[in-house]
Length: 352
Ligand SMILES: [Zn+2]
Image (cartoon, rainbow, N blue to C red; front, side, top):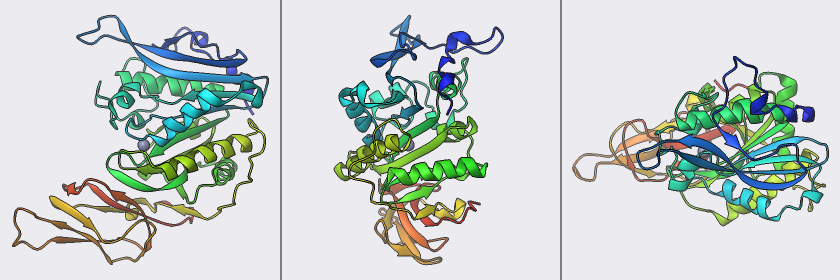
């Protein structure tokens, strides 16, 4: 555990190292509960000397592991931020051992607007890591998370849902770690979350996500995909709240979970590019299967209708692999390249 690293504050940066632009009243070493803001200087047309206020809660009691809990990475994914709001309001600091750093609406402009990307700069927070102190607002926030928060922590929990364009089986996810011992830490943690499904996802190898950065920083790293469709699922929210409690118990920050986790243990994976069914024409996508359906390579997955040209036959899309339907596009309207379906397969350790 690296709890002693809690002194790695922005003010400690050496002279030539890039410094965060964010300032805050939070004291990461203070016992008790603080609910305050990170403040990012922001100077748009209607607010010359304003700030973007990013909520942060630090709950600390004595010594123990430090866990970062992130929600609002994408602004239209709600179960995570709601679960973290409950934690912020309800958790008695005396119940924990260690430190929680909770950032429930980390890309605040995107959360305030209910959008995947920031309305300020059009950036997807989860494609900006490691960020930049001289970049756009979104890049400055990811720089703070990567360079100020990650060095303080032992573990990172990144709570996503499917967002406006996807509906996903509520699940806990793992970012692969190249070091086997680190991967085992991630797997042990994600199984402790005890979601109905657990999936290894590497975003086609993209290094710019917060979980990929957390793994590079050595943190035990767990994510989620909870429902989606730009709405709140009561069932997924229940899985999310219980899973976070289970994880915090696994890390030793909370007492053992009651009731004990049910013990879901099967690991699945998105098998690289073969896990995705993409639209190849404009139109309206009709899926042929529901979540959880067992499907086969070459089997019709759905079809794209040309509603304004009814004499033209729909274009059939096929599954590129055997597997289980994990995610489905939400809006009917598609254009070439849109992700229509996602399929998972049993975990093999090979994601290419
Ligand atoms: Zn997301």
